[in-house]
Image (cartoon, rainbow over all chains, first blue to last red):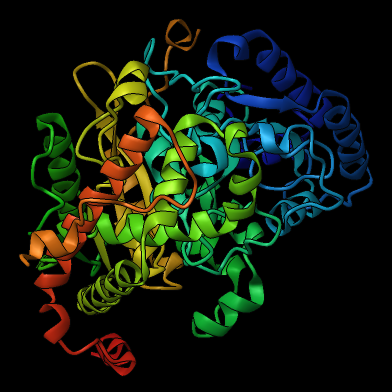
Length: 456
Length: 63
């Protein structure tokens, strides 16, 4: 059960091989047994989850099951949920309960998903992890799971739940998904509603799924996203069409491969795995096309100014009243965000606008652009605490442009740590991004899972 | 005034008082970000460059 995919579970429920109460009980038992070490969860909704599971079983028996009926899901603790506190991993929101679900949560709940709890994250998606500690990567002892949706990634990679939700403002779904060997989707900005999400950056926050497979991630995205928004912007297509469209071969797929930034300074195993994947995709029928993106390596500052100045605006009043209640890293990052002046923001917006135009031009020449997700694999928790590298190195590009991006695993490094590959597509090009990701997933054939010994 | 001076003034005005190592780190973040931002902005042509007009995005999408 712990390695069953979302779609596997639905089929098992339909055939009667498994029941929601069995699966949810098993998930809760594994969380109880393993999470003291993993630190994936901030809150576990034991009784509420079992009540939901029993209701799901009744709906399966009465042939009124929804598309996600009885599947255990956990939500990043920055999305409001009615059946669990929403804390943002911060003392400031300790014990706060929303009277309604975030829209993305509500959509999954209406589809029948059983929420088993709230996952660990960097405070307010940008800072410290002081209260519960840093989530552990199930692929190695003492290894960082990534952030800010680290708990969401750990929960899936450890086999606690088959899928989770996360948020991505500069890579916060894709980085932990890459570090933990998962598929993670950052959708087009605005495709999945941000209503009910504690904001960091209004102009770049997105909500998306983390799962083991591209099909699972596509299925969840089709249920989380706003159907009218997709229909208006994706030439009349429906969200449901995303799921079958991911299959098929790569014949005629035009894949842009950047010659700037994304292949500079890669760890040798990362470059080797990504190049192998691209070669396999080409053998499957894709056409690889060089694309120039000279601004790609010069966006970190613009991204920081825009995200953190918007984040400061969200927290300005709280910082004035209760700065001491924030974690140290959160406090200094947000306060730095408030120090940027009009000229800084003007320059950052100019750089972001130029990048957006350049990225759109590049994406107009191909179907997708494929890059490594990160130049390295996961590192130690100690390094994350004292000297973290720039993990938005390969991911901020889609946030600044508002475009979708999918990460998927393409191999393991010599230490057994996952390597991530990323697919970029134009805005509202989720169908193409997921199709290309599925082609890559098929030709790569990644099926490894962390061992039990590495998990605890 | 050099571009470096203009981009990274000696003092950084933090909106919330911080002390010790936190203040130094926040100031360091702002200074280094401003330097990198000035470099990126200059790559576009700086203040002399025309801003990207909105229609260019749509033209790029149609090409």
